[in-house]
Length: 191
Image: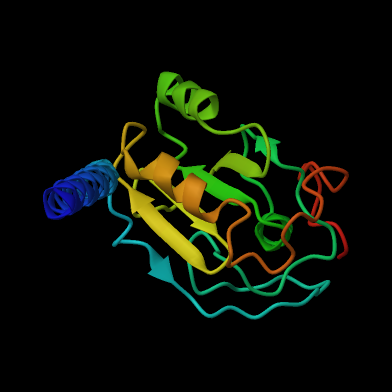
């Protein structure tokens, strides 16, 4: 009788562990599927260009290798983050990038309703939105050392770029002010 009880107990233990293993495996498969689907549904940021940029304050005009600039030497005073209807000084905007802002620039001939849609879509903090003459693409998103040309307002990569690079790991002075600087209406502050 004891042997039969032990055998029954062993079968119960094996069945219990088999059930636990099956449940854990099912959870692992479900979590993996969710992660894979989420990553597959996110627009790829493969087209983001990366640059090695200098850092430092200058009081003279700067010629930047990118249009618009994605970092480099800049004015001592940053540009207040926000929405601008006129082009802003590069040197002040670059200082905002150093603080973790994303600078979204658009061609000046972009229809007003699309500019309004951009302004509505973007976060209220650590973002600068302004027109920029001479862009190759309708919209360009820039962060410190990073840049992405976008096809239009509805390009799904814009929110992903902002999510990835606003106050992102590439930011030299993450968390530094994005207010209390200049509004960009005069020549770059610090010159």
